[in-house]
Length: 247
Ligand code: ADP
Ligand code: MG
Image (spheres, rainbow, N blue to C red):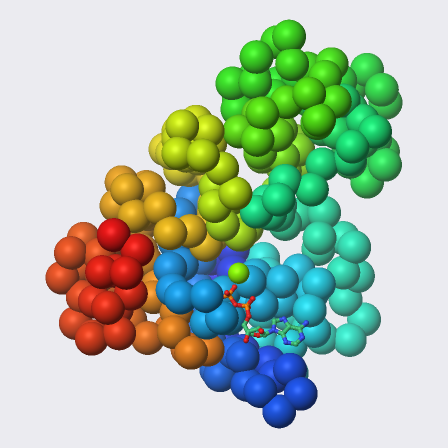
């Protein structure tokens, strides 16, 4: 595999908060077009890992090679890097005073410098990709369901044409039906070979969309492999116990 096939290479990443080590030497890679799913108990360090990848949190050590650049090196323009990394959070994080369409347009105009017309075209395309209903385009977040809001957040990420989209428990604040519509969109993106790193407890999604599943436990990758291996036939006791708990 050549380096250009890997969007992300993480080597021996470490982070502690005070005395508490939270990432204890994490290494893995994400290939272009791949969907990688991270599962694991609360407090294992999953969100910390995702936040290190766009340096919302500064790691203590290790390397994060994004598209061939070690983004932890001095002199790296992190804003440029962030423009190429999509992030979808548990709580949507839309701008409340902007409509769905405006939420998707704003990054295109401010970060990418597009004209209003160009941004509008691109935003509409992205909103259609996540199957947002046309009558919701001009509504404000408070007028949308949680599932619609999260789909707008995904459209906002997609419109920027990122190299990778990071998802941090994108459906855990949603009722099952609304979670389902978001997961359907994510499955379609996986099929279209959008590169995704997804923290989720949705085992069904992991089984049919993930190329690989990482089980995170106590700041390390405890076990990883093909989805069926990890989810149906895990080797380690901690993985089995976690899966039993969330079943
Ligand atoms: P997960 O997403 O797997 O539930 P987190 O990455 O959120 O885990 O948290 C891992 C550990 O780091 C937890 O013990 C949490 O309390 C701690 N932690 C996370 N963020 C901070 C912070 N900003 N300051 C101090 N401790 C933190
Ligand atoms: Mg978390």
